[in-house]
Image (cartoon, rainbow, N blue to C red; front, side, top):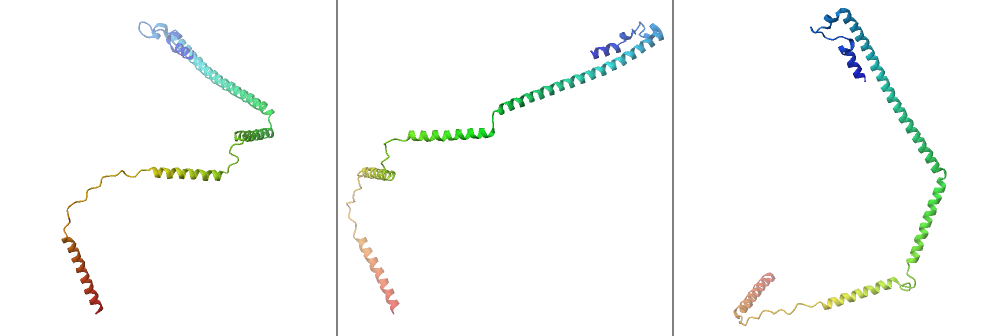
Length: 196
């Protein structure tokens, strides 16, 4: 609305000045008409400035009112929430809450004890010593291990290579005897040299 007012007030049509065939408004209506038109233009411009200021003020006030309404709603809701919390906690006392939690814990412990008692076998296995049972289990395991070791079969008979039927020459045996005799002679010579 302000933009339309401004365009209308600044336009020549708003002040009654229309360009004539020669292109000048002063030539058509004279100086007096032009002066009147300029005065109207100045009044319209002043009114337009006032309207712009008023619109700005109204816009600012509208925003301030919206903010105030928002703040009022927020505070109202916060108050309602505080009252609701207070009403919810009116019937609660921290000592009562602690007492209730202890009762719940005690009942849970009792339920666990009952569950343990029910799940315990009656008349089965109560007469046996666990150490004796473990010793018997170890014996059974050892017997099973021994049995498994005895059942392990050795390697199947593998054919061995045949012994050569060629006779070994006796000369190398003599050579060995000769080497031993030679070693003995050296040892005796050394022992004799040491004793002298």
